[in-house]
Image (cartoon, rainbow, N blue to C red; front, side, top):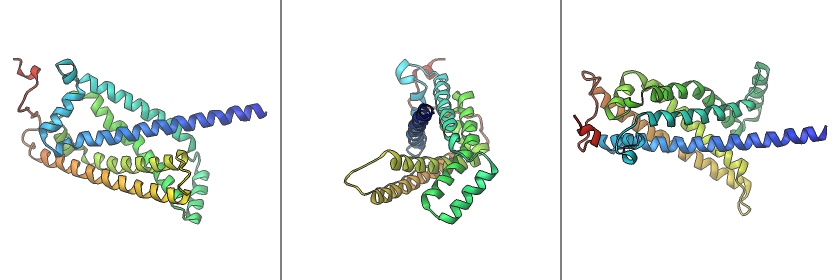
Length: 246
């Protein structure tokens, strides 16, 4: 019996570690993705060059949009893995939800409230993130300054707005909880570490949400100028080699 409990405890620890690592990778991807799509704030040409980078142009001498689909498949697989591991800790019944909410209301503890918000945002992302990723997977050639701006303006801006808040809050809260769980600094009292991590969490959330809103607004405004030309595609001032071919 003792050996069984020991094995279960070891498996639980390994699953917790896998959940933490997959969550950390997703947070890093989320931040990198935000910086890349916000290249539209620099210029349309900058965003175009980012797209060409991920299509492999600067490595192979021509663009392969299907490389974007491969990358999206990997990200989606990581999301499925992380979600499956995280669902182990979600309340599994109405009764468990009631008990937790009662506990949350009585305790009025900030970390308990943050865990609840992580559950809520994680649940929202289970529906919103695959929708966003499927568009990138199925139409990797429809990513670019004009194509992306038209997509944001014409159909998807409410999805992107909700997804922005859900992803950034979920990621920052998750990173805060990772810090509390795995980070230990002997010279820093736990209460002080918690306070500094909390400030870091809110600072990161504010920064990436503001950056995301500015980026979303830039795409939306660009999309308004494409109302009469929805199929227009951006033409670079310095075209790639394959664009010069007849």
